[in-house]
Length: 197
Image 1 (cartoon, one colour):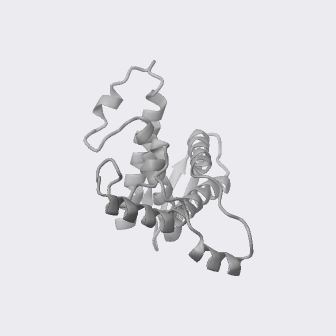
Image 2 (cartoon, helix red, strand yellow):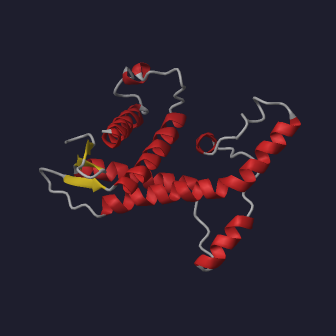
């Protein structure tokens, strides 16, 4: 099971992680939380539900390319669609959906962190992380967001197959992020496969 998820009886998946892998995953998830931003912790739960229905989010896309990738325009963005009506519809869609999307991304990253924090790895063997089906969904969301963030920083495009990135020299400062990007992709792929079997 080392290095990839495997299906578990009754649903869910499991993977063995060593201390370094746990540390890397946790660090990346914390960085993602910092990037997405803090949630709104005001009020009690009943008030929060009602307030969240009427709370407007931002209407402009984020300036940071990673945030723009994590929170894309609904209708292609102003540089792709010059029509004012489409831009207005995109701004309105963002205003009513981005806060919820940010909250889900935070929840997914926090679920990943909490499950890692519950592990007690042994120096030689690591620890087995067992995820229930709902935890798998949150992990998939977090892994996807981490890959999108790293891929955006690395300027990966839809046409890239990863070959060029793999050929970077060891001295290239992007190399560790390339390796993390590819490793996260392997985790994501095997988690999906585990859930489909």
